[in-house]
Length: 335
Ligand code: DP6
Image (cartoon, rainbow, N blue to C red; front, side, top):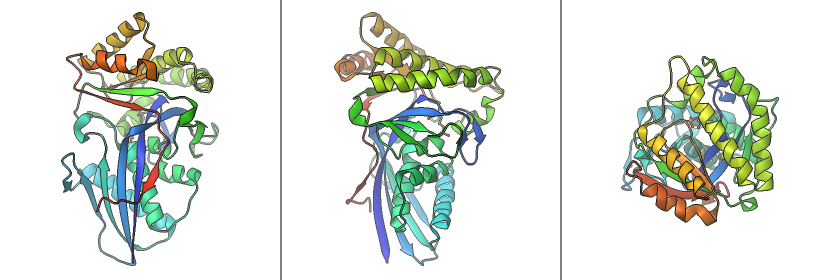
């Protein structure tokens, strides 16, 4: 018998970043992180599980044109190792067929690991008939090696790990999406794949002379970000977001060998956001490990932000996203 499940899991934007690991293979972070789960940038994954079948698994991605094709070797390897682990954990034998599709353009330089591995975990686990609560799913998603996937199984504002003294602890909710309807104007200035994968950035982080200082400063910043979310205070959240993003890149750029993600377009967008603020528009930037910029603002400023950012010649595309409710299952399948 074949059991088929489709899961939709969102990407998330880190407000306090995971950068540097205690155990890179198991994605155990050095520090607590906080993120906002997105709404429109999602991965949709259908997993079909045939109990008892012994043929090799089949993993495919659907491209922007809607055509099913073989995934990149690196995604295939990571996904294969992950489904082997899930099957082992669930004590099942059988064959998977997996198809996945992103709502955002594949070549846009927008990270899809968090949403992709969260969706894969949710779909594969349920297709095997295995049961789990959100905390267990968060841990299973993290074990894919994409630590940020641990946060994508929960909607709204999320903290991971939930216990600062236990890096193996799952993500947990700080506040639901309905608490504060923040927008994220995802600004693409570089559509290429980044030169240095996050996993290598994590490995190099501790070689930066600024890394230990960052860890020391984080306790105060975590409290500030958590407090600003709970108080819905963008004036307090914004500066903490920008400091945090700059610090991630400061550590990356001063690692040995250095990791340099910024492109000329990155600086143009940052300059524009500062200009917007001088004109009274409360908008603040953050960036993950890449050249693209996430502009965080409230719904009343979103239109002006989108118009001003889209007009920059360095900007290739803009996706208007915002806080989302988290993953869901769908009755309609990809195959
Ligand atoms: C800078 O190891 O989760 O985005 O496997 O590429 O998803 P991927 O990366 P991961 O590191 C994320 C690094 C970050 C910050 C963050 O999301 O916390």
